[in-house]
Image 1 (cartoon, rainbow, N blue to C red):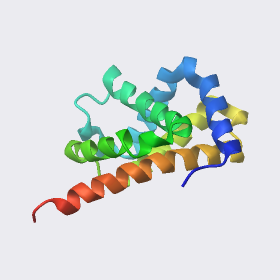
Image 2 (image 1 turned 180 degrees about the vertical axis):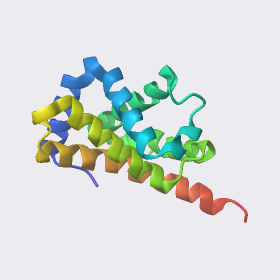
Image 3 (image 1 turned 90 degrees about the horizontal axis):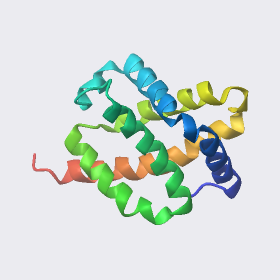
Length: 145
């Protein structure tokens, strides 16, 4: 479900503000995710690596990019969801990553992380995560039992 223009604008604006600190935001995301869901660490070759942090930055970029290019939701994001099944990603991991993203944004935006901003980011993330989750479920359902 598309988000409102106002919500999309809030996501874009806050990301532009945070972009120079994207590695710090990713570091916060990974710290929260791995502290609260240590089992997720096994999905990464090296959970404390630059590559792992880069994957978190890519999540954010995909969320922001989908606002201006919703067609990526039906192409690249679907394919990404299918690939993530191979990595061992389960549906619950998307919820865990959502919480980690919102916590990192709250840390780095401080008082500017208003309820409206939180809801905008949650809606934008959910749009991407839902597509990935559904693509993954289709892959799992098609596997022989």
